Image 1: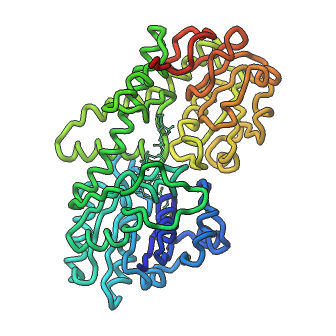
Image 2: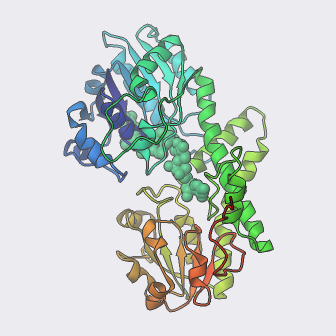
Image 3: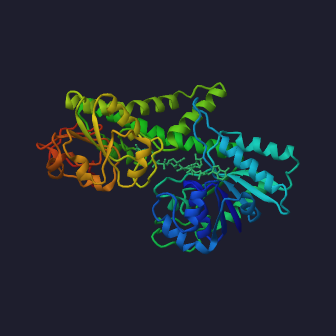
Length: 462
Ligand SMILES: NC(=O)C1=CN([C@@H]2O[C@H](COP(=O)(O)OP(=O)(O)OC[C@H]3O[C@@H](n4cnc5c(N)ncnc54)[C@H](O)[C@@H]3O)[C@@H](O)[C@H]2O)C=CC1
Ligand SMILES: O=C(O)[C@H]1O[C@H](OP(=O)(O)OP(=O)(O)OC[C@H]2O[C@@H](n3ccc(=O)[nH]c3=O)[C@H](O)[C@@H]2O)[C@H](O)[C@@H](O)[C@@H]1O
């Protein structure tokens, strides 16, 4: 089929590439001329594993343009995949979506054949319906049908999540369902040519597709993110308890996660969730509930716990150092999680500002986002190109993002450059036993005294 995707961000571009991979012809449209220029040169405009290879492998089925007119002429199906950031009151900001929709309409109303317009953006319940009403009011219902097809991919494994999703959610009327089922058939039945580097997860034969109305599709997206955020805040509260009662949160997570009704995923305690979605989507869902007169208590607690978690870990650092004024802190990891260059809502940023306010000197490192970090961090933060350089003269090291290279750090490596001996592991990614008797290791919920014979994760005896 011929497909157009409006927006070449993390979602739009990886969706476009995945659709090309399964055999469709895809035009990617963006108002950002630099992104389109970069794509035309075969370069990915942001870091996402395997994206560069996939762009190259599918170049005969991928086209790029800044002209929505040129792009939409091409499509039987056109996706809207633009940002829906946060308004100051927590609600979703639909400005980009409305702009993209208005531009799309002005082109599609003149097009001879009909188009299925599909909203992939995370948007409040009722958004697709209200856009449909606009189409109807302009007498365009025969030409343009509108669907909601929320996206569940994770940054850092976006292509894999696109090709091997846990489920597809197809929101709309019967003709929309029929078109989307045809479009996604190779993914649903897993019949496409497997890309090199991205093996299919074992056992995956069919992907379930839920055919629902647009309101259910929209709510399901927010509910999924809120539930995952709830798991993180829950385990962070358990971690805070573990600190007080001298238990180990990783072992607790292993034990409760072994129950299939709970599951081990998203039970990694740390400094809290960040990124372009969980923070904004939890706030948007709470705002949506408020506007319907419903107080979503559990969600409010999830948000509150997350906001406090980072500060809690900083307090541990302060307790260990006495006071922060004049102390040098080596911050390792700036992105909101490993595997991405995205700094949006990364916990590292408020954390660094907090440390600066308390008078600390900051040296920071990130293996991918170092250059971009210059635009979001104050100049007095020393951005270092190498980990070793970051550690120079530091009183404490603070791991904020669990990039694999930090997980290899040993007391020997740290002590070679550091002045002090405090290690704050904000992601529980180091083995505390390695530091016993050598450095002061502070994890999140790792109250258990580190003893060599204590296994790192709870062990099953069968
Ligand atoms: N980033 C993620 O991991 C996920 C994001 N989502 C949702 O998907 C949507 C898109 O998110 P991202 O891809 O992260 O956004 P992004 O900010 O990375 O990309 C959006 C792109 O749309 C372009 N754009 C804006 N207005 C446009 C217009 N009128 N015409 C053409 N292009 C336009 C921008 O230049 C930008 O390149 C959001 O609603 C987000 O909540 C859903 C699942 C995962
Ligand atoms: O709507 C979205 O944008 C996406 O949001 C998340 O994906 P993403 O933001 O890419 O990243 P996650 O891997 O979910 O991590 C989010 C944050 O939670 C933190 N996290 C995750 C897991 C965990 O156990 N503990 C924890 O603190 C991560 O460090 C990170 O800061 C969801 O996982 C996707 O399904 C969803 O599509």
